[in-house]
Length: 226
Image (cartoon, rainbow, N blue to C red; front, side, top):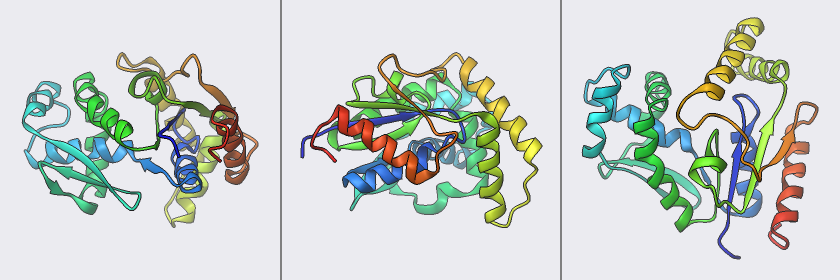
């Protein structure tokens, strides 16, 4: 099978990660968890006792840390300065750190080559908000996955309740709308479809239907791959 990369972008709650994981499993290629990469920087910031709101301090440590991702049997493992972090990056506090540091252009620029290196060395599915526009502008397939905000809020509410967590639908809807505004207006890599991305609206599709629609796009772009 030839080397190829698939980029999936879209707003929060559209189901990008779930779709990307299924595509990777169906095609037998690697799923790149970009969030884990930013979490690794967040972990480094916390470990060094740096305030994640201090952009200058966060930027200052970047030249002194090494972030690396390795794949073993398709599973992504994150390393900081050569040390495997395992589940340490999944702590709730790290989520907050990662969210803050990922908004800094300096951090995004620092991790750009890390992500491109992964894609050069592996056939991958990578999802995010600037994969097709910034990270992998030459990706073989670009899909922009979207759904209306009410639908995305409903899915998020159901997901939280399924885990036994409390969920206020109205608050979640407002959080999603605020995230959309922030992602679309940020100075560094704002959320937008790449010029050559295929738009896939899954407002009225379940996950399996979304997968089949995405595979149809991939078959058209890469005949014989799936």
